[in-house]
Length: 199
Length: 210
Image (tube, rainbow over all chains, first blue to last red; front, side):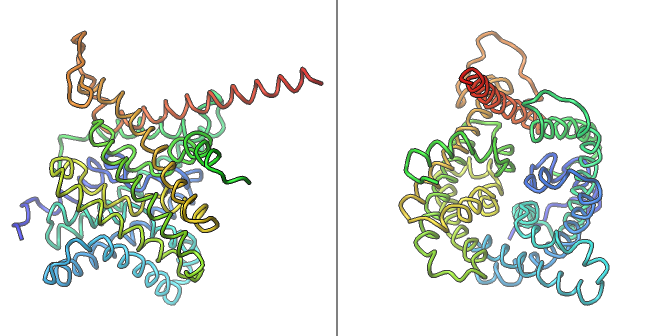
């Protein structure tokens, strides 16, 4: 095992919200980012759910990887392990929410099953292993990435609510225009690079 | 709906191309396309996984109970992805570092799940194999188109060979993420432009006949 890179966890936190945003610079979680960004309210709900699941799964995957997978030398099975952990924790979160926070469950319930196949969630766990983060770094990396994803999808949805009413060339209607908006957003977020970077 | 080889081929490569029509598998399509080499390896990897996972899932389609089919699909896909990952790591270590986590993310690539759900569940193994293979080829072609333009403009090279004969300044925007978003938007625009023109022609022909 190599030593963890000595980056302050707080820099990781802010960098993963802004300069290394999951969706705008690493292109993770694009599928739902495009298809569920028509309405601000729904998009924001999905963002909240993703943030919650991301924090939860990063912590569990960190523990499972460090204490079960590495000691047994099963690193090549990590994809299978991570995907099962994610699917299981989404189920557990859904059950727990239904029992303890029924109001929140009604609001976020429909999004939870979708999150299992959101590549951002699996991506976070894989980045965590590749970059060899320690526990605090992983926790804040997961939290920051979740918040960054939430920020990005709500911004995109707010812009798309306006552009849905405007006239655009026929070929650009729908996904074409959305990609151009995302490109412009990514350029805006790039303006922050240089303040802090993680890689 | 007919499901012979030709319809499957045409559908996956153009009419329902996974990337530009259905907006599936975008994550990796954007992330690995700054170099042609990376895109080609990624495309071949995805082709292998879609083809064989469609074949396996179609062969098992009567044995898998409906309620747990998602988890079975994911496990079958994960098994093939592990094979691809180990193969790339062993034979092309440099590309493996460049691709980073995106090889592992083939598991959550919606194209594979999409083909398994929409096609392999209802069809025989051999045709499912080709359906998966052609979906992978459709994905690879779009990836190579984006990568070709991004690599020429961003680095002035094609597959690492210098083609910058005019000595223009490299466009940094093509190397960084926003360039990928703009390129895919342009390709989608071109594709739907061609389709729209085709539809208009058909309509005017009908009107003429009446």
